[in-house]
Image 1 (cartoon, rainbow, N blue to C red):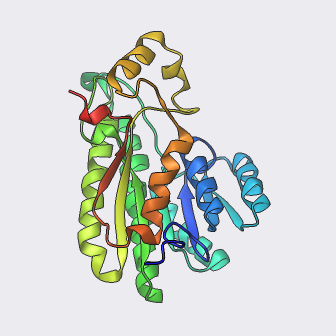
Image 2 (image 1 turned 30 degrees about the horizontal axis):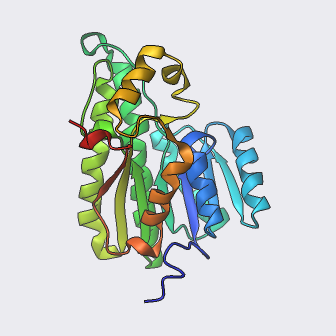
Length: 257
């Protein structure tokens, strides 16, 4: 077997939601470095333009779309605009997410619904549009959802986030089984605790920071670039016979008793 192209994404176009910072940005840059053109989506077009410029400096194309994924009813229109402007989309990576904290007994229904819309409904609708496009053009594709180690465990004050990420794990399995006949691989990556802009307050909290270090066998937080390898594997030909799986990148957290 010629392994030279196993992890290459040449002549592929990848859509990454939540691509303006953190894990989404790292994955988008990693895909570009492997040869892919990128469609970048988030609420902040100015920050996206900076990421797009980095990608173009690599010699790849980058397209910027501003959209709040909480507006799930608008996703089909946004996706169609992407297809009109860019053409074929080969890889979908659902990274955009949110975590709002409160005790379960006082977690209001509006906030609950917002978290589920962003973390679970939006990935489903994007995946649905991706599948319909693949079927129409008679080609396969790769879907990567971002779950969490909290798809398996939980802690106090994050009932909506835990529910949404548990849902992502099961949604990944459901879509993998249903869409295998169309040549669409659906997998998930479950990050542990990564140091990003979103988690900065937790890193700076001495008690929580020590909790993460004590609970992670590698004794540290993850760096955003350390998620790229898993994403590249699941987006590339290297994973053509892998579907319905959740790959945890957590420094050993879930293996630790």
